[in-house]
Amino acid sequence: MDVAMDILADTVARLGFPRVLYAFTPTPRAANGRLIPPPVICRNFPANWERRWPHYNTNDPYYHACFDGDLTVDWTRLRREKSLSPMEREACRYMDDFGMDQGVTVPIHLPRGQFAAMSAIWREAGGTDEWASTVTRTRNRVFLIAHHFHAVTHRKFGKPIEVLPPVRLSPRETECLTWAARGKTAQDTAQILDRSVETVRLHLKNAMSKLGALNRAHAVAKAMQLGLLSPEP
Image (tube, rainbow, N blue to C red; front, side, top):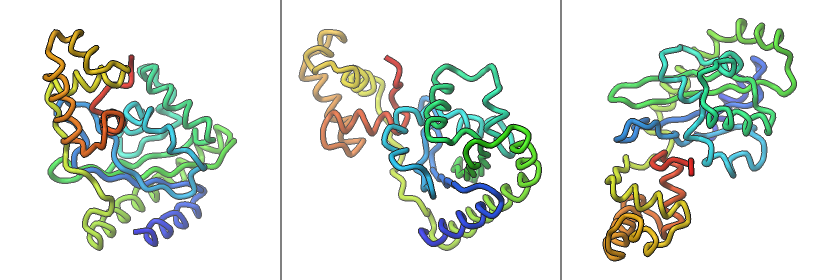
């Protein structure tokens, strides 16, 4: 898969895109309907980009747009939409800080609800007119490359990205984990929810087990990454 990603990066670079990302998930939505950010493989992304991305990825507007039916998502065009939420705009600004404000994402909708995508990110400091010309010139080729890459890698490697089975937290487990994410102890949460401390600890323990987490902080981090908890206070 590493070799395949290197070939993909070289291919899109010839079209003027120095950075590329591939994503795959068998379960793009949680039981509550919220989109779950997929695991990704990147090439030529800035150092430390992924360090704080889990805080923003549940509000990635480019990923959200993949489920609105567009064949190819033009980042620049999408960012003009007035319907973007404040959290989506914050995710855009995070990408901007790393010089990744212009790109395209090709969604690949698969049988049984599975989903894949490829994003090709343009160079920094590109002009608006030049970007529009680039999109017009490369849109069809990027679309074909994305679908061909996915088809080949899945035929050769099965699931090319290691993914976890879908996690289903109960409403009470989610509630207890949410309060833990806000810095509350089990005793605090028990008082807030009017439950015994033992009950709260049991819900937290069950959530940790389902998430494969080592402790509560680890469980909160994994739940956030999977889109099971809201980052909003």
